[in-house]
Length: 87
Image 1 (cartoon, rainbow, N blue to C red):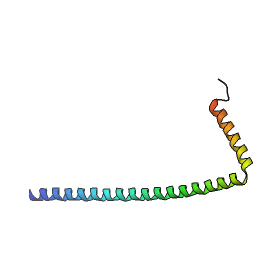
Image 2 (tube, helix red, strand yellow; image 1 turned 90 degrees about the vertical axis):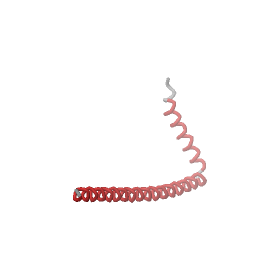
Image 3 (cartoon, helix red, strand yellow; image 1 turned 45 degrees about the vertical axis):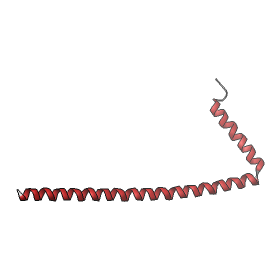
Image 4 (cartoon, rainbow, N blue to C red; image 1 turned 120 degrees about the vertical axis):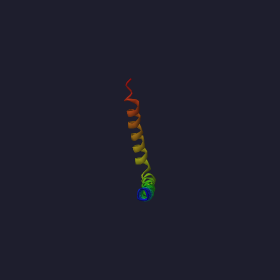
């Protein structure tokens, strides 16, 4: 009976070790994904700031062209949302 209880104890220890290793692997993978997500967020935020600054420069340098473009875009979006005025 001692051999059987020893085998059961070994199996339980092995199962605990496997579960612990799996949990550690999952935690490591989660940390890596989180770090990559944070890095991508920072890169995207930086690029958005650069593009906003470029757009502000264009608007400042060419206010009439920017105003006409904004009106044209607003007109097109309005027509699309309104269904071209047909009901």
